[in-house]
Length: 404
Ligand code: LLP
Figure (cartoon, rainbow, N blue to C red):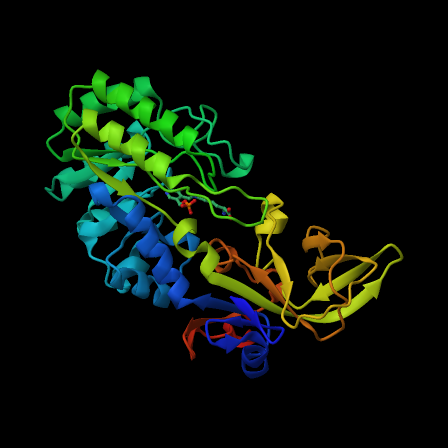
Protein backbone atom coordinates (compact mmCIF):
# COMPACT_ATOMS: atom_id res chain seq x y z
CA UNK A 1 0.00 0.00 0.00
CA UNK A 2 1.40 3.40 -0.91
CA UNK A 3 0.45 6.94 -1.89
CA UNK A 4 0.73 7.74 -5.59
CA UNK A 5 0.00 11.41 -6.35
CA UNK A 6 -1.41 11.71 -2.82
CA UNK A 7 -3.89 8.92 -3.42
CA UNK A 8 -3.65 5.78 -1.36
CA UNK A 9 -3.31 2.68 -3.53
CA UNK A 10 -3.30 -1.04 -2.96
CA UNK A 11 -1.18 -2.88 -5.52
CA UNK A 12 -2.12 -1.05 -8.78
CA UNK A 13 -5.55 0.15 -7.75
CA UNK A 14 -6.49 3.32 -5.91
CA UNK A 15 -9.02 3.16 -3.13
CA UNK A 16 -11.04 6.11 -4.38
CA UNK A 17 -11.74 4.19 -7.58
CA UNK A 18 -12.75 1.08 -5.66
CA UNK A 19 -15.05 3.07 -3.37
CA UNK A 20 -16.71 4.79 -6.34
CA UNK A 21 -17.45 1.42 -7.88
CA UNK A 22 -18.43 -0.68 -4.86
CA UNK A 23 -19.64 1.83 -2.26
CA UNK A 24 -18.40 1.73 1.35
CA UNK A 25 -17.50 0.19 3.76
CA UNK A 26 -15.24 -2.28 1.94
CA UNK A 27 -12.77 -4.90 3.06
CA UNK A 28 -9.87 -5.07 0.55
CA UNK A 29 -7.16 -7.71 0.61
CA UNK A 30 -3.84 -7.71 -1.21
CA UNK A 31 -3.01 -10.98 -2.95
CA UNK A 32 0.70 -10.20 -3.23
CA UNK A 33 0.97 -9.39 0.47
CA UNK A 34 -0.67 -12.71 1.27
CA UNK A 35 1.81 -14.54 -0.94
CA UNK A 36 4.70 -12.63 0.60
CA UNK A 37 3.55 -13.46 4.15
CA UNK A 38 3.26 -17.18 3.41
CA UNK A 39 6.67 -17.29 1.72
CA UNK A 40 8.27 -15.39 4.60
CA UNK A 41 6.63 -17.62 7.20
CA UNK A 42 7.94 -20.72 5.44
CA UNK A 43 11.41 -19.26 5.04
CA UNK A 44 11.63 -18.45 8.75
CA UNK A 45 11.28 -22.12 9.62
CA UNK A 46 12.61 -23.77 6.46
CA UNK A 47 15.20 -25.95 8.22
CA UNK A 48 12.53 -28.22 9.68
CA UNK A 49 9.66 -27.83 7.14
CA UNK A 50 6.71 -27.57 9.51
CA UNK A 51 3.13 -28.34 8.56
CA UNK A 52 1.48 -24.91 8.48
CA UNK A 53 -2.22 -25.03 9.31
CA UNK A 54 -3.87 -21.66 8.72
CA UNK A 55 -6.09 -20.65 11.67
CA UNK A 56 -9.40 -20.33 9.84
CA UNK A 57 -10.97 -18.33 12.67
CA UNK A 58 -8.81 -15.36 11.73
CA UNK A 59 -10.45 -15.11 8.31
CA UNK A 60 -13.28 -17.28 7.06
CA UNK A 61 -13.59 -16.01 3.50
CA UNK A 62 -13.63 -19.18 1.40
CA UNK A 63 -11.95 -17.52 -1.56
CA UNK A 64 -9.02 -16.46 0.61
CA UNK A 65 -8.83 -19.96 2.11
CA UNK A 66 -8.73 -21.35 -1.44
CA UNK A 67 -5.77 -19.09 -2.25
CA UNK A 68 -4.04 -20.12 0.98
CA UNK A 69 -4.65 -23.77 0.09
CA UNK A 70 -2.94 -23.26 -3.26
CA UNK A 71 0.24 -22.35 -1.36
CA UNK A 72 0.08 -25.76 0.31
CA UNK A 73 -1.16 -24.76 3.74
CA UNK A 74 -3.50 -26.87 5.84
CA UNK A 75 -6.12 -25.59 8.28
CA UNK A 76 -6.61 -25.23 12.01
CA UNK A 77 -10.34 -25.26 12.73
CA UNK A 78 -12.33 -24.79 15.93
CA UNK A 79 -15.89 -25.68 14.95
CA UNK A 80 -17.89 -27.84 12.57
CA UNK A 81 -18.55 -24.73 10.46
CA UNK A 82 -14.85 -24.02 10.04
CA UNK A 83 -14.14 -27.68 9.33
CA UNK A 84 -16.85 -27.73 6.64
CA UNK A 85 -15.43 -24.54 5.14
CA UNK A 86 -11.87 -25.91 5.04
CA UNK A 87 -13.11 -29.09 3.34
CA UNK A 88 -15.19 -27.07 0.90
CA UNK A 89 -12.03 -25.11 0.04
CA UNK A 90 -10.55 -28.53 -0.82
CA UNK A 91 -7.97 -28.57 1.95
CA UNK A 92 -6.93 -32.17 2.41
CA UNK A 93 -8.23 -33.74 5.66
CA UNK A 94 -4.65 -34.94 6.18
CA UNK A 95 -3.69 -31.30 6.75
CA UNK A 96 -6.51 -30.33 9.12
CA UNK A 97 -6.27 -30.07 12.91
CA UNK A 98 -9.28 -29.43 15.11
CA UNK A 99 -8.75 -27.37 18.29
CA UNK A 100 -11.12 -26.01 20.95
CA UNK A 101 -12.29 -26.67 24.52
CA UNK A 102 -15.91 -27.53 23.76
CA UNK A 103 -16.28 -29.75 20.73
CA UNK A 104 -19.74 -31.36 20.78
CA UNK A 105 -20.40 -35.05 20.06
CA UNK A 106 -21.85 -34.02 16.71
CA UNK A 107 -18.71 -32.09 15.80
CA UNK A 108 -16.42 -34.89 16.96
CA UNK A 109 -18.39 -37.50 14.96
CA UNK A 110 -18.10 -35.36 11.85
CA UNK A 111 -14.34 -34.85 12.32
CA UNK A 112 -13.85 -38.60 12.86
CA UNK A 113 -15.88 -39.39 9.77
CA UNK A 114 -13.75 -37.01 7.70
CA UNK A 115 -10.52 -38.61 8.99
CA UNK A 116 -8.74 -35.34 9.68
CA UNK A 117 -5.10 -35.34 10.75
CA UNK A 118 -5.67 -34.59 14.42
CA UNK A 119 -8.33 -33.77 16.94
CA UNK A 120 -6.50 -31.74 19.56
CA UNK A 121 -8.42 -32.54 22.73
CA UNK A 122 -8.46 -30.28 25.76
CA UNK A 123 -9.86 -32.44 28.60
CA UNK A 124 -10.18 -36.02 29.79
CA UNK A 125 -13.96 -35.79 29.27
CA UNK A 126 -13.44 -34.87 25.62
CA UNK A 127 -11.05 -37.78 25.12
CA UNK A 128 -13.55 -40.17 26.70
CA UNK A 129 -16.19 -38.86 24.29
CA UNK A 130 -13.83 -39.33 21.32
CA UNK A 131 -13.14 -42.84 22.57
CA UNK A 132 -16.87 -43.61 22.89
CA UNK A 133 -17.63 -42.40 19.35
CA UNK A 134 -14.56 -44.12 17.88
CA UNK A 135 -15.55 -47.40 19.50
CA UNK A 136 -19.08 -47.15 18.06
CA UNK A 137 -17.66 -46.44 14.61
CA UNK A 138 -14.98 -49.15 15.08
CA UNK A 139 -12.25 -46.66 14.29
CA UNK A 140 -8.91 -45.64 15.71
CA UNK A 141 -8.74 -41.86 15.93
CA UNK A 142 -5.57 -39.75 15.80
CA UNK A 143 -5.55 -37.19 18.56
CA UNK A 144 -3.42 -34.59 20.27
CA UNK A 145 -3.62 -33.38 23.84
CA UNK A 146 -3.36 -29.66 24.46
CA UNK A 147 -1.01 -28.80 27.27
CA UNK A 148 -1.51 -25.66 29.31
CA UNK A 149 2.17 -24.86 29.91
CA UNK A 150 1.42 -22.08 32.42
CA UNK A 151 3.42 -19.62 30.35
CA UNK A 152 2.70 -15.91 30.24
CA UNK A 153 2.59 -14.89 26.57
CA UNK A 154 3.12 -11.22 27.55
CA UNK A 155 0.35 -10.08 25.26
CA UNK A 156 -3.09 -8.44 25.66
CA UNK A 157 -4.76 -10.10 28.69
CA UNK A 158 -7.91 -11.06 26.77
CA UNK A 159 -5.99 -13.04 24.14
CA UNK A 160 -3.59 -14.83 26.47
CA UNK A 161 -4.37 -18.55 26.64
CA UNK A 162 -1.43 -20.42 28.17
CA UNK A 163 -1.60 -19.47 31.84
CA UNK A 164 -2.85 -21.56 34.76
CA UNK A 165 -6.10 -19.63 35.13
CA UNK A 166 -7.06 -19.93 31.42
CA UNK A 167 -9.67 -22.44 30.29
CA UNK A 168 -7.42 -23.89 27.58
CA UNK A 169 -5.55 -27.19 27.68
CA UNK A 170 -4.69 -29.34 30.68
CA UNK A 171 -1.97 -28.99 33.30
CA UNK A 172 1.08 -31.26 33.49
CA UNK A 173 -0.38 -33.72 36.00
CA UNK A 174 -3.61 -34.16 34.07
CA UNK A 175 -1.60 -34.48 30.87
CA UNK A 176 0.33 -37.42 32.30
CA UNK A 177 -2.90 -39.10 33.46
CA UNK A 178 -4.50 -38.61 30.04
CA UNK A 179 -1.49 -40.16 28.29
CA UNK A 180 -1.98 -43.27 30.45
CA UNK A 181 -5.68 -43.36 29.61
CA UNK A 182 -4.93 -43.07 25.86
CA UNK A 183 -2.37 -45.85 25.96
CA UNK A 184 -5.00 -48.22 27.40
CA UNK A 185 -7.56 -47.35 24.73
CA UNK A 186 -7.83 -49.38 21.52
CA UNK A 187 -9.63 -46.61 19.71
CA UNK A 188 -7.33 -43.71 20.40
CA UNK A 189 -4.06 -43.10 18.65
CA UNK A 190 -2.20 -40.43 20.62
CA UNK A 191 0.09 -38.69 18.14
CA UNK A 192 0.45 -35.09 19.18
CA UNK A 193 1.11 -32.68 22.00
CA UNK A 194 -0.32 -29.25 21.23
CA UNK A 195 0.13 -25.83 22.83
CA UNK A 196 -1.02 -22.33 22.01
CA UNK A 197 -0.17 -19.67 24.57
CA UNK A 198 -1.91 -16.66 23.05
CA UNK A 199 -2.15 -14.27 20.15
CA UNK A 200 -0.33 -11.10 19.00
CA UNK A 201 2.89 -12.27 20.67
CA UNK A 202 5.85 -9.99 19.94
CA UNK A 203 8.47 -11.40 22.30
CA UNK A 204 10.13 -14.73 21.49
CA UNK A 205 10.93 -15.45 25.16
CA UNK A 206 7.47 -16.76 26.11
CA UNK A 207 7.77 -19.20 23.19
CA UNK A 208 11.14 -20.34 24.54
CA UNK A 209 9.58 -20.91 27.97
CA UNK A 210 6.71 -22.79 26.36
CA UNK A 211 9.20 -25.07 24.54
CA UNK A 212 10.99 -25.75 27.82
CA UNK A 213 7.69 -26.70 29.46
CA UNK A 214 6.92 -29.05 26.54
CA UNK A 215 10.39 -30.55 26.72
CA UNK A 216 10.00 -31.16 30.47
CA UNK A 217 6.77 -33.04 30.03
CA UNK A 218 8.05 -35.10 27.10
CA UNK A 219 10.83 -36.32 29.37
CA UNK A 220 8.29 -37.28 32.03
CA UNK A 221 5.87 -39.26 29.90
CA UNK A 222 6.79 -42.55 28.36
CA UNK A 223 5.25 -42.00 24.95
CA UNK A 224 6.52 -41.32 21.44
CA UNK A 225 4.79 -38.27 19.96
CA UNK A 226 4.95 -37.86 16.21
CA UNK A 227 3.88 -34.21 16.23
CA UNK A 228 4.31 -31.18 18.43
CA UNK A 229 1.76 -28.55 17.47
CA UNK A 230 3.08 -25.18 18.64
CA UNK A 231 -0.08 -23.25 17.78
CA UNK A 232 0.09 -19.76 16.30
CA UNK A 233 0.17 -16.38 17.97
CA UNK A 234 2.93 -14.64 16.04
CA UNK A 235 2.24 -10.92 16.30
CA UNK A 236 2.29 -8.24 13.61
CA UNK A 237 3.11 -4.52 13.67
CA UNK A 238 -0.13 -2.62 14.15
CA UNK A 239 1.61 0.64 14.98
CA UNK A 240 5.02 2.09 14.18
CA UNK A 241 5.90 1.77 17.88
CA UNK A 242 5.30 -2.00 17.79
CA UNK A 243 8.41 -4.12 17.90
CA UNK A 244 8.67 -7.18 15.63
CA UNK A 245 8.74 -10.79 16.74
CA UNK A 246 12.29 -12.10 16.40
CA UNK A 247 11.65 -15.13 14.19
CA UNK A 248 15.36 -16.02 14.11
CA UNK A 249 15.39 -16.49 17.87
CA UNK A 250 12.11 -18.41 17.87
CA UNK A 251 13.46 -20.65 15.10
CA UNK A 252 16.67 -21.21 17.07
CA UNK A 253 14.72 -22.19 20.18
CA UNK A 254 12.76 -24.73 18.11
CA UNK A 255 15.94 -26.14 16.58
CA UNK A 256 17.36 -26.62 20.09
CA UNK A 257 14.16 -28.39 21.03
CA UNK A 258 14.36 -30.60 17.94
CA UNK A 259 17.88 -31.64 18.90
CA UNK A 260 16.39 -33.24 21.98
CA UNK A 261 13.13 -34.53 20.51
CA UNK A 262 12.61 -36.12 17.12
CA UNK A 263 9.18 -34.84 16.18
CA UNK A 264 7.42 -33.05 13.36
CA UNK A 265 6.33 -29.47 14.04
CA UNK A 266 2.89 -28.07 13.27
CA UNK A 267 2.05 -24.35 13.37
CA UNK A 268 -1.40 -22.75 13.44
CA UNK A 269 -0.78 -19.13 12.36
CA UNK A 270 -3.67 -16.82 11.57
CA UNK A 271 -2.78 -13.17 12.09
CA UNK A 272 0.79 -13.44 10.76
CA UNK A 273 -0.53 -14.83 7.47
CA UNK A 274 -3.55 -12.64 6.82
CA UNK A 275 -3.47 -9.67 9.28
CA UNK A 276 -1.62 -7.06 7.25
CA UNK A 277 -3.21 -8.05 3.92
CA UNK A 278 -6.54 -6.36 4.71
CA UNK A 279 -7.73 -2.73 4.72
CA UNK A 280 -11.14 -1.41 5.67
CA UNK A 281 -12.24 1.54 3.57
CA UNK A 282 -14.90 3.75 5.05
CA UNK A 283 -16.54 7.05 4.17
CA UNK A 284 -17.13 9.94 6.55
CA UNK A 285 -20.88 10.45 6.92
CA UNK A 286 -20.82 13.50 9.20
CA UNK A 287 -18.33 15.52 11.17
CA UNK A 288 -19.60 16.75 14.53
CA UNK A 289 -17.71 19.48 16.35
CA UNK A 290 -17.95 19.07 20.09
CA UNK A 291 -15.61 21.77 21.31
CA UNK A 292 -12.20 20.28 22.00
CA UNK A 293 -12.62 17.42 19.58
CA UNK A 294 -14.41 16.56 16.41
CA UNK A 295 -16.27 13.29 15.99
CA UNK A 296 -15.51 11.81 12.60
CA UNK A 297 -18.59 9.68 12.06
CA UNK A 298 -17.75 6.87 9.64
CA UNK A 299 -19.99 4.47 7.76
CA UNK A 300 -17.98 1.55 9.22
CA UNK A 301 -18.66 0.58 12.80
CA UNK A 302 -17.84 -1.90 15.54
CA UNK A 303 -20.01 -4.52 13.84
CA UNK A 304 -17.62 -4.37 10.86
CA UNK A 305 -14.43 -4.24 12.93
CA UNK A 306 -14.82 -5.31 16.53
CA UNK A 307 -11.18 -5.30 17.70
CA UNK A 308 -10.97 -1.70 18.99
CA UNK A 309 -14.22 -2.06 20.99
CA UNK A 310 -13.37 -5.54 22.25
CA UNK A 311 -9.69 -5.23 23.15
CA UNK A 312 -8.89 -1.53 22.85
CA UNK A 313 -6.93 -2.56 19.76
CA UNK A 314 -5.22 0.16 17.74
CA UNK A 315 -5.40 0.12 13.94
CA UNK A 316 -3.39 2.58 11.91
CA UNK A 317 -5.85 4.99 10.27
CA UNK A 318 -4.99 6.91 7.13
CA UNK A 319 -6.64 9.39 4.76
CA UNK A 320 -7.29 7.97 1.29
CA UNK A 321 -6.44 11.35 -0.27
CA UNK A 322 -3.54 13.07 1.38
CA UNK A 323 -3.38 16.82 2.00
CA UNK A 324 -0.92 18.99 3.88
CA UNK A 325 -3.49 20.92 5.94
CA UNK A 326 -3.30 19.76 9.56
CA UNK A 327 -6.35 19.99 11.81
CA UNK A 328 -6.00 21.87 15.10
CA UNK A 329 -8.66 19.69 16.68
CA UNK A 330 -8.47 16.20 18.06
CA UNK A 331 -10.30 13.71 15.87
CA UNK A 332 -12.27 10.82 17.31
CA UNK A 333 -13.14 8.28 14.62
CA UNK A 334 -16.45 6.62 15.51
CA UNK A 335 -19.13 4.49 13.89
CA UNK A 336 -22.92 4.98 13.81
CA UNK A 337 -23.71 2.20 16.33
CA UNK A 338 -25.52 3.00 19.56
CA UNK A 339 -22.65 2.09 21.88
CA UNK A 340 -20.03 4.41 23.31
CA UNK A 341 -17.38 1.77 22.62
CA UNK A 342 -18.13 2.11 18.92
CA UNK A 343 -14.99 4.09 18.25
CA UNK A 344 -11.88 3.20 16.32
CA UNK A 345 -9.19 5.65 17.34
CA UNK A 346 -8.54 9.16 18.67
CA UNK A 347 -5.83 11.13 16.86
CA UNK A 348 -4.13 14.49 17.22
CA UNK A 349 -2.58 16.39 14.33
CA UNK A 350 -4.45 14.46 11.61
CA UNK A 351 -4.96 16.22 8.30
CA UNK A 352 -8.06 18.38 7.88
CA UNK A 353 -10.99 16.13 6.95
CA UNK A 354 -14.30 16.82 5.27
CA UNK A 355 -17.60 14.98 5.11
CA UNK A 356 -17.58 12.29 2.35
CA UNK A 357 -13.78 11.86 2.56
CA UNK A 358 -12.51 8.28 2.63
CA UNK A 359 -10.55 6.74 5.48
CA UNK A 360 -8.43 3.58 5.42
CA UNK A 361 -8.24 1.45 8.56
CA UNK A 362 -5.19 -0.79 8.23
CA UNK A 363 -4.23 -4.37 9.15
CA UNK A 364 -7.76 -5.71 9.45
CA UNK A 365 -7.20 -8.99 7.56
CA UNK A 366 -7.24 -11.06 10.74
CA UNK A 367 -10.19 -11.06 13.14
CA UNK A 368 -11.78 -8.22 11.15
CA UNK A 369 -14.46 -9.69 8.94
CA UNK A 370 -14.48 -12.97 10.91
CA UNK A 371 -15.58 -11.14 14.06
CA UNK A 372 -18.13 -8.97 12.25
CA UNK A 373 -21.83 -9.14 13.03
CA UNK A 374 -25.18 -7.70 12.05
CA UNK A 375 -25.48 -5.69 15.27
CA UNK A 376 -27.90 -2.77 14.83
CA UNK A 377 -29.04 -4.76 11.78
CA UNK A 378 -26.25 -3.47 9.63
CA UNK A 379 -25.32 -5.48 6.52
CA UNK A 380 -21.81 -6.90 6.34
CA UNK A 381 -19.37 -5.18 3.94
CA UNK A 382 -18.29 -6.39 0.53
CA UNK A 383 -14.88 -8.12 0.38
CA UNK A 384 -12.47 -7.62 -2.52
CA UNK A 385 -9.25 -9.34 -3.45
CA UNK A 386 -6.78 -7.15 -5.33
CA UNK A 387 -4.15 -8.78 -7.51
CA UNK A 388 -2.12 -6.25 -9.49
CA UNK A 389 -4.75 -4.30 -11.42
CA UNK A 390 -7.40 -6.98 -11.02
CA UNK A 391 -10.25 -6.60 -8.55
CA UNK A 392 -12.21 -9.68 -7.61
CA UNK A 393 -15.35 -9.66 -5.48
CA UNK A 394 -14.71 -12.48 -3.00
CA UNK A 395 -17.85 -11.85 -1.01
CA UNK A 396 -20.77 -9.67 -1.97
CA UNK A 397 -22.09 -6.96 0.32
CA UNK A 398 -24.85 -8.50 2.40
CA UNK A 399 -28.36 -7.61 1.28
CA UNK A 400 -31.02 -6.57 3.79
CA UNK A 401 -33.26 -9.37 2.60
CA UNK A 402 -30.66 -11.88 3.82
CA UNK A 403 -31.39 -11.00 7.42
CA UNK A 404 -34.75 -9.23 7.47
N1 LLP B 1 -4.49 -21.86 17.36
C1 LLP B 1 -5.37 -21.74 18.37
C2 LLP B 1 -5.70 -22.92 19.18
C3 LLP B 1 -5.96 -20.48 18.64
O1 LLP B 1 -6.81 -20.38 19.64
C4 LLP B 1 -5.62 -19.37 17.83
C5 LLP B 1 -6.23 -18.08 18.06
C6 LLP B 1 -4.71 -19.56 16.77
C7 LLP B 1 -4.17 -20.82 16.57
C8 LLP B 1 -4.30 -18.45 15.84
O2 LLP B 1 -3.63 -17.44 16.49
P1 LLP B 1 -2.94 -16.23 15.69
O3 LLP B 1 -1.77 -16.80 14.93
O4 LLP B 1 -3.95 -15.66 14.78
O5 LLP B 1 -2.53 -15.28 16.74
N2 LLP B 1 -9.81 -12.01 18.26
C9 LLP B 1 -8.49 -11.76 18.75
C10 LLP B 1 -7.57 -12.95 18.55
C11 LLP B 1 -8.08 -14.22 19.15
C12 LLP B 1 -7.19 -15.40 18.87
C13 LLP B 1 -7.85 -16.66 19.21
N3 LLP B 1 -7.08 -17.83 18.99
C14 LLP B 1 -7.96 -10.50 18.10
O6 LLP B 1 -8.69 -9.87 17.35
O7 LLP B 1 -6.84 -10.11 18.35
